[in-house]
Image (cartoon, rainbow, N blue to C red; front, side):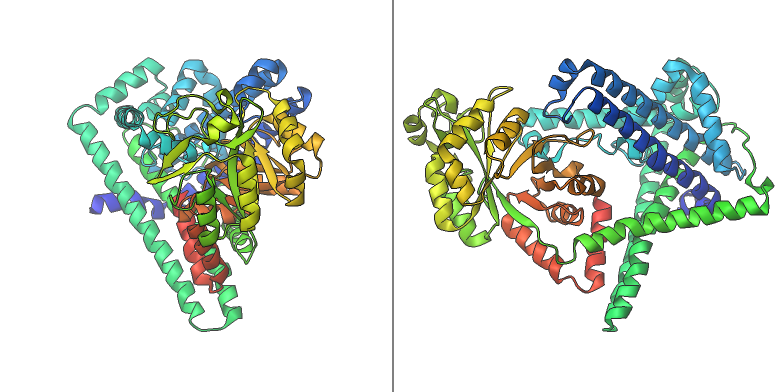
Amino acid sequence: MKRLWELTWGRFWQSRWAFSRVYLAVTIVITALAIPVLKGLVYVGQWLDNVPFLSLANFKQMLLQNPAFTVILIMAIVALLAVFAWQAVSYVLGFSAIHAGQKPTALSAMKQAGYQIRRMGFGRSALIVAYGLLALPFPMLTFHSALLTDVKIPEFVWPTIMATTWMWGTLAILFVGALFLAIRFFYVLPELVLHQQSAKTALRNSWQKTAGRAGWRLMFKLFFGSLLIGAMTLLAFGVTYLLQLGIDQLGNLDASALGAVLTFILATLSDILFSIVGLQFVFGLMTRDYQVVALTDFVSKSKRSKRWVGTFLILNLIVQGATPSFWFVVNTANRHMKIISHRGVDGGNGVQNTIPALQDTVAKAHPDYVEMDIRQTKDGKWVLMHNPTLTTLTKGASNKSISDLTLQQATALTVYENGHTAKIPSFAAYAKAAEQAHVKLLVEIKTERQTAPDLADSFLKQFKTVMDQNSWEMHSLNYSVVQRLKKLDPKLPVGMILPGDFVGNPVTSADFYTMEYSFLTREQVESLNELRKGVYAWTVNDETGMVAAYSQGVQGEITDDATTLHAVMQDSDKARLMHQKLGRYIVNILAE
């Protein structure tokens, strides 16, 4: 235990300023230079090739139809991976030098990393990137990179995975396999960077070094070291929370507000601090048996240079600490946000997209909007249905699509879910029920074809009056449908659904964007809001996600649990005592 403490906290504290210099300098280069430049490159491609947006919804179509944009996007991805490799090499060089007793300048570590990346060639550089991606799901084995924050499985996919045995079984096997390979190839980075080995030799040497008991010992050190760092992080958060709680108990609002300035910054800085502790632990363990590269000594710099570097790093820390905490407080300060019931249900109280569920949800959960899905029937009418086929909800009574049935045939079918039964409703009947319940609708047009602007014509021909009279809204995954809806009815609020992250600012006629919440960032929301575009987060079903989306400034959240979202909103509004807001902020940090 004593040895583990020395490897984690003891070694960090001994050279805390040196580790912090390297970490913060690399972080600044990536967040303030590399990411904006790469985004700018993509924006140029988007403008040159008239690409309205790029997300999971139109990825294949854009790549096939927009060759200039495709070339620029590939260039940006290659550049991003090169910067990712540079980041890894910078950490290996800088942290290994510090562990060996040097006090290097951050600039010398970064310059040497750039030099090595240029000399490595494709094979060795690709192996660095491959190991970083392989170890990405395991924080104890690698480093966090702002470049790859969106490399993850979208939240809306998880329910499907967990409900399908072969899917979660396959994922579990892949997870265990990735962990095994990440442990066995743990020494690939120092082999490539410090010993300048070829890719093949680096793989072989790492495999040999982690064979048998050596691999088990390494895994246990990483595991228990991560637990210790996690415990220290929680302790720091706990002390910060108790400090704010003590200030709040004084009953002085000014003291509470001033204390919050300090404690919110301390919470963010604690997160940064223990990120550095974790990094130096992993790279120290990784490189301790290797001959390190000599870097420029920070001690040799003039007092003036040291003073400028110190001032810059302290200001950077303050900004990094203050910015997210400031926006969290601002965005959760009694701000109105629409509560939108996903498919008209609340906690499994009925069958999705049916009138009984709508009525029960509105009566008990009181959402601002009910979001629901519509499909066109064979005879040109509209009914509520999410799935492309009826097999699941009808329990096999019909395996057809809505487009294969007439309105009469579709509405005669019974659907089953959550222990409830109901008839498939027509949109006309559902709209009448919504009017009677005094709730607004958010209507999603489902399409079965890649481009279906005629669906917009058909729907508005039948229901434009009721949509406009009730100030209801519409959204769709289909770009052509969104554009057509706005052209036919400029007054109608229309949204574009973006599953997963998007590249570049979307250029569409949409008034708002419905975005998968696990990919949302405050910067994205701000960017779209500046363009006077609203943002709805979907589908947010846990309290942590609800608070996170609310704190990012979204205008609405779509949820399967409107009752819980109401409670979370009320708690956030009541959280005038700063320790309550601080507690939610800390949970938000831990969930990232």
